[in-house]
Amino acid sequence: MTRLSAWLFAPVPLGRLAIFRTLTYAFVILDVLVLHTSGWYHGYADPVWYQPLVMGEVLNLPAATVALVNVLKWGTVAAALVALSGRLPRLAGALVAVGWIWYQYIAFAYGKVDHDRGDFVVALLLLPTVGSAFWGDRRPSASAGFVLRAVQMTAIATYFLSAWAKVRFGGWEWVNSATMTRAVVRRGTPWMEWLLDVPWLLHAAQWGLFIAEMCSPLIFFVPERVRRLMVLGWFAFHAVTYASITIAFWPHLVMLLAFLPLESYADRVARRLRRPGRSRPLPVERAL
Amino acid sequence: MLILAALFLGGTFVGDDHWWPFSPWRMYSTSTGPDTAVRSTLIEVRTAAAPEVWSPAPLTPAQVGLNRAEVEGRLDRIRRDPAMLATLATSHGRLRPQDPQWLGIRVVQRSYVLKDRAPTGEVTEEILAQWDAS
Image (cartoon, rainbow over all chains, first blue to last red; front, top):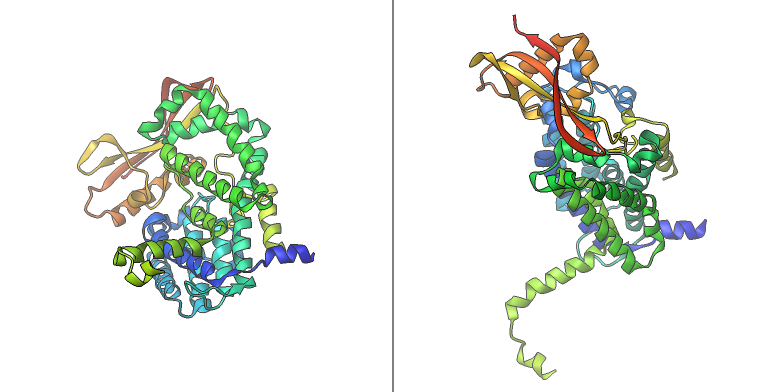
């Protein structure tokens, strides 16, 4: 048990969490305003199309109206801007969580649920548990470590449990079905339609994806270098998916960043930005 | 932590989409038979600009407040009660007041026939429901 909690609460520099938090709240703004706008349009749909989810029944959430979607949209953006500034991290973070989750609820309570947002919900709920954290802050923090660990685990659960969902809904024969052909027929991009002429490739891709998803939890048991390669592999998978059928799990892609040493990347970028300012070494440095 | 894990596991093995955010991660989880047909739904409309002509219209949130999958998920109800389509014309009028009004909507289902996981090129069309403004 102590080993497990040591792993769950493994300290990370607060600066890493600060960067992750910045990326998350910046993504919230992008998502609400640009990427996932169907919830806003549901304000205009007739309530006859509203199909409350369990969450809506428990919390007694009403069908969307134009006023409600506008309040949620702009309220979430305002709270995210405050959270981005680093002020009131707990209050602003909690407001973002409520606003964003409700806005997603409205998007999903009209008959279609997207399956790429579970880990983002966990991140928004847990981020406010860490108080002030600023870029460049090197103090180790167990609570920051826990938030990132929880996000990592939900991100990987997305793959692992989606493999089991395939078994449950598609049966073990999913790997030999024409599911990827169906996806390309329905939403294939013009430059990927050639895939339909090589059905064995999509068939093999189904096996590959299923095996990768089933084995995804191994990421927690491999050396750090391999772990980063695996994260890179998932990014590559999502890039190919986007090129083929223009589906991207945007919030999930942000969550995958929880695996990476963001603060050292930021340091590297900062060093490179600083360098052109003094392209020639100073005489003192040369002497050293 | 344990509660979250239990909810996600429960969602995957017992729950359905209504459990969101703990619903099963089932994107493309169903099996499509190698020799079946892939169905795709679209709408066609008659507008005030051309009241006699049925022409395809985008089934997107920006046009009708709903997307294709949301309409596809309610096909049974739409077939029983085609008047439900009238609400799409109303939403379209609110979202795009500058566009010609929709006077009629019909739901068309296209089927692309597959053989050995590849499309044969055969496509059939069926009109599932129709509403006309009276």
